[in-house]
Figure 1 (cartoon, rainbow, N blue to C red):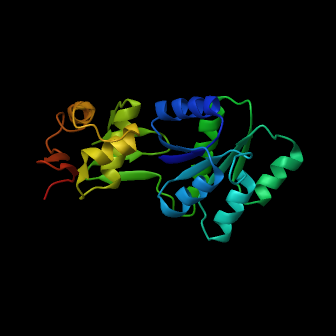
Figure 2: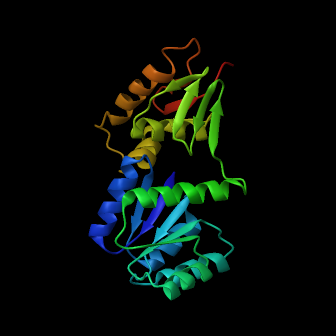
Length: 225
């Protein structure tokens, strides 16, 4: 899942980024409300975590502007303002959930999963299938031919990107940005290393390979043709 974190406190932002990244989510960070609004309007993401008090534009104004523009991106407010009136104001502004600081990362992850399930009823993708491989995005599990495949967090995130783009070439740069959240480094072998590990789990034990290398471009995922 791709998540925008709008938070101007570096310590909190580092904590959230670390926790969500370890759970396999991709994180983009901004520290200004206006930057957050621009990001949400012109970039694709699955969910936003928004601080109430930010420079440029406060969280309430940000969410109101999103809703006024017809953007229904799920939003979780993350803030030190935890009184009942503050929570009500956040929800009335168009927020979907409200988590007061201090908090445990496990609770934030649970709220993200719960919000994803609720949005799933409105058409949110909760699972992916390519040929005989099934990926459960909510349960964070993979199965092929009925066999459960154990994946590390980065392997799961890598597989999710490939399956979401099944039939299309996904470049190394795209994978670095979406799975590891850093710019392209021509000397890095992290993508190749993780693709190799992923192939050992989802391809080698089975008759039909699903992950295919596109020379000088990247990778493409598809079943038999």
